[in-house]
Image 1 (tube, rainbow, N blue to C red):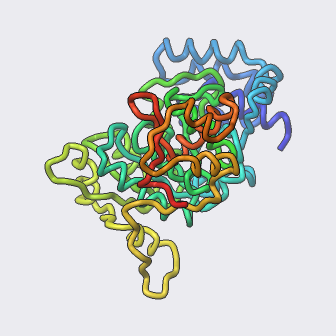
Image 2: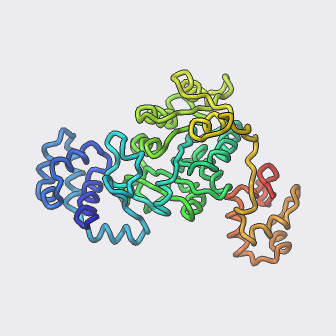
Image 3: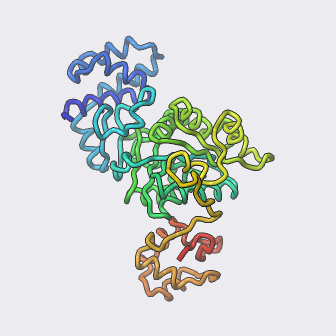
Length: 372
């Protein structure tokens, strides 16, 4: 990959980041970087877009500085994966108007794993949370799980993968110099150790509602299949599922209570042809070879291996009884770990759902998830 090709694609992405169709059209008309720069303004004026949009494109183009932009990417530890290069994810390359650039922070190698998407509502019920955790526990043994790093189901997808010491990929609708929503910052940071964040949005681009459906085509496009665990009518998860169907991907959905609005979306998907999922075998049997085409039923609670704990984390858990509620001071006394370090390990254990903080500010071990 030459520097000119990288700068060419970066320039197109920075100018037309919300318009993949226009980006591809410009590349087709001006495949050479110098020609593109020389003719960009006339190309913009020729487009059938409103004047406000054209003005924005022109501003982005006139302020373009390739060297400065690459320096910013390097400062944030962000890699660029270009379309039509060997590093580009093979499944994504075949969707309609794939991103010309994928920005990646973390481990780009995870994009070449077997990927499976799991999405759902931002406001799941306990049933939706349990279904997500149980199914993702099994799926993470065979796939790297992909979701949108949103609140709700997405967060539980990533968190379950972390609990099982497997990588997970978050697809964002913003530039990777930030994280959204902020409430998921701890999960997002933990993901970078083995997994990745990806986005087609350039640096400095904030979260705006219309960018999420555009982002969703990447979630489905990266993966061999997609599961919706809980979703209401016309939710973002349902939109993602329809995009997956358009991309010729397998779509799966978990049924829910018939009197719950949070089940309307998944039930509609099942009526439209998505495969009903009762347990993980309903998905895994479509991808893996089993002697009887089935696997054991997914347990209602994910099993855990001590391998996902550091020595200090395991020591903290050993000092906590299953039904004992401890204050931070009591934990500090029991573990003999300095409070600054203890807070760090407590945060990691909360992310991995080994412990949780009570409303009174005390800590308790999560008996439903602990497997040591």
